[in-house]
Image 1 (spheres, rainbow, N blue to C red):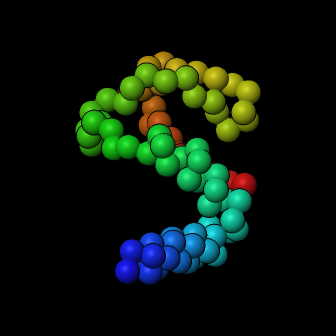
Image 2: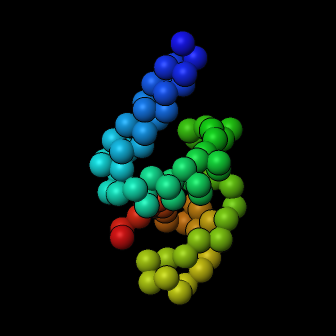
Length: 85
């Protein structure tokens, strides 16, 4: 009985891996997600309306760097988190 249950569970994990590979773009993307993104994936304690933690960010040209505290309050500041690859 245990062999069937373990085999079914392994088959379910394998099917989930291939479904993720289909939606994420390929098996290498799933592996990268599971290896690098998932361990750091946790919910933070920052809430809407609180000040963002000071961080060094780069502008769109990729060369100009500044800290958030230098720009907050002067003009509207838009931060875009995403991948454009």
